[in-house]
Image (cartoon, rainbow, N blue to C red; front, top):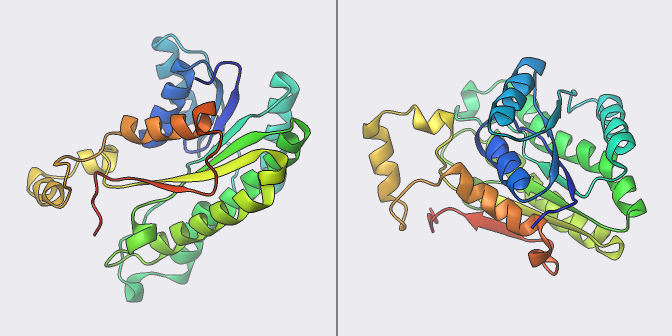
Length: 245
C-alpha cells in the first residue's frame, strides 16, 4: 500500500509509533523513525533489523527548528523526497491543575503542539516541491471529550485537531492531505503494566469489549497514508472501540 513512499514517524521507538513504523515497512515504505534519545532509536532499529527490516533513525530536538531542518535535509539528500509525516511524539498528563507546574504544562504543549508545527513546517516545502504528500497527527479521544485531570494533555490534543483541520484546508491546493487519528485506551507499555483491577473497569466502558492494540492504531495510519484515502483530508479518525465518554 505504500510501495515507493518515504515516511518519517516521530515517537517511533515504542508503542503506537513503533508499530506504525513496522506496518509502514510491511507495506513497502522506506521509514525514518525519530526518538527522543539516541539509545532508544538504536534499540528500535536493532529490533526491527532482527525482524528483517532496514530502517534509519534520528534523535533531533523536536523543539529546535534548526535541528529538525538539518535532519530533514539529510533525509531529502538520501531519498530525494518525503511523502508521509506522522507526528506521533507526545507526552500525557494526569495531575490536577493545582498540582501541575507551569513548566510541566509548557513541556506538554512544547512536545504535543509546537513539535507538530515545527516538523510540519520543515517538511511542507519538500512536499510542495514533490506536488503532494500526507501529514498525519496523533490526537486522542480526550481531544473530543476531555479528561478529569491533567488538563494539559487534552488541551494539547484539541490544538492538534485545530492544526489538522486548518492545515488540511491550507495545503489541499498542493495535494497535501492532513488527517489525525484519535486513539482510545491502547495497550502501550504504560497501560500493559497496570494491574488487572484497573484494566477491567476500563474495558467495561468500551462497547467492543477490549482495549485497543497498537496495531489497531497503526492500521488507521496506514489507511490514511495510502492512496485508499486519497479523498480524505481534515478528518480526526476515532479509533476507540466506540468508547465515547
